[in-house]
Length: 119
Image 1: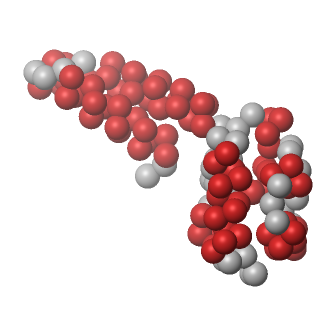
Image 2: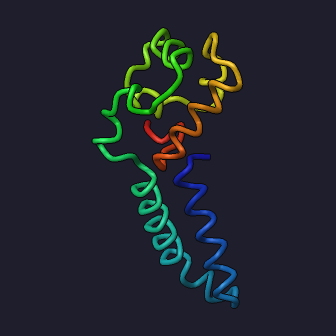
């Protein structure tokens, strides 16, 4: 399931819980669905990094030399390159141990960013 669909499903469940009568939910299902996907789209836009953040070089993250070298060896030079990866892809980067991975995750979190935030 796509992240957008997961967001929409969560919103739909919350709306269904708030709108108790099942008959109302059935009668206005299209409206509830449209609202849910509207909220999900807004959540996706808020989650997407800004263009300026994507172009930041790895050196701006103040990573250790070892971590930076491991990422560069994999062709990762910008924050945007890193944001395209999933957590499991980062785990498989050769030479990038637990401390280095935690360093990457924390550096992104400090900037309000996370892996997999870019398509």
